[in-house]
Image 1 (cartoon, one colour):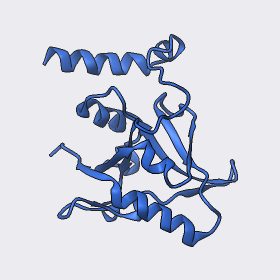
Image 2 (cartoon, rainbow, N blue to C red; image 1 turned 120 degrees about the vertical axis):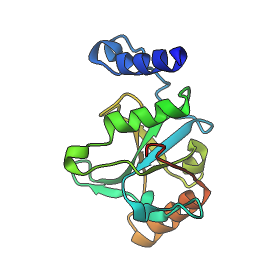
Image 3 (tube, helix red, strand yellow; image 1 turned 90 degrees about the vertical axis):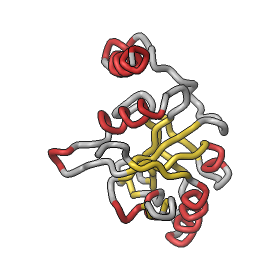
Length: 162
């Protein structure tokens, strides 16, 4: 329990302004193929809990008009215990006041994404471990095909909270 409490406190401190300034939660700028990534799922129609299947809609990118590209938000999870991966989502993705409740998370290695000729933009917002999957094609059919390939190979974890 003490170790878990320490990890939780370290996670909070390292993601604070001072922790970011001191680069306590620093990962390499480039996402490596063997690195773990997670996508937090806010909608029940993004997964099938009975089969453990992640649906393509969970991975399909959204258009970011400010950056003039399609992107999918993920978090880098190397070095984090499963309970701390959930804490990242609860703290930086979930917003219960706005109806944004995490239901599950889809996870895989970055190599699965790289294998679909996509890249990562590590931007650290809103959290140092945040990255966007970029390089999606303009064709809707091609985006869906790549999202399907990624989703079919991802693993699913249901939110452990009651």
